[in-house]
Image (tube, rainbow, N blue to C red; front, side):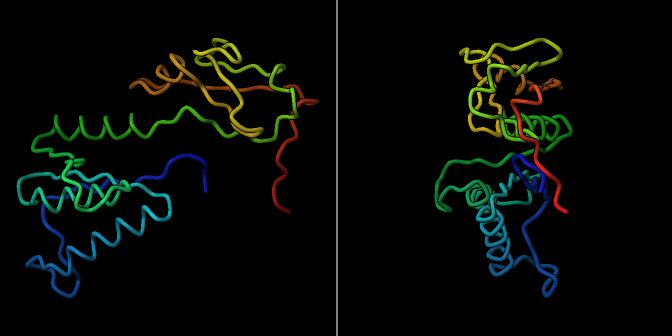
Length: 178
């Protein structure tokens, strides 16, 4: 229920099987896996596929990555990761995490019309300018969006602290359910 992107990272060393037929791998098991990735995507959850080793066919890995990211199953672009050693596995996870990071942040309330001019958004305790190509804006009354170089900074591999503060008379806080 938390805001932000939802993902599944599937790292596997072999073709799918099923509880009914634990080995060998069957076309039915592959179809079950494809359908699960499609169903997850339909609910807004992306699937990133990492092949760990050489026991997964490129065709199946490509299909899983494609449907898990909303592309056509038969698209030939290889969107999966092959990680045959520790360094490649770490690189795959780093790339996935960096790709999932967002520059939009949900507020714990609704900013009143014009209230954004009273807000202060900071990255790593440094104020960011409003309505600047490298600053921030309200993309909706409940969402702060970082732009340009500020967005690029937040999406880099380092951890960053993003805060947004608005005076009490400019924001209506969300009320917790009773």
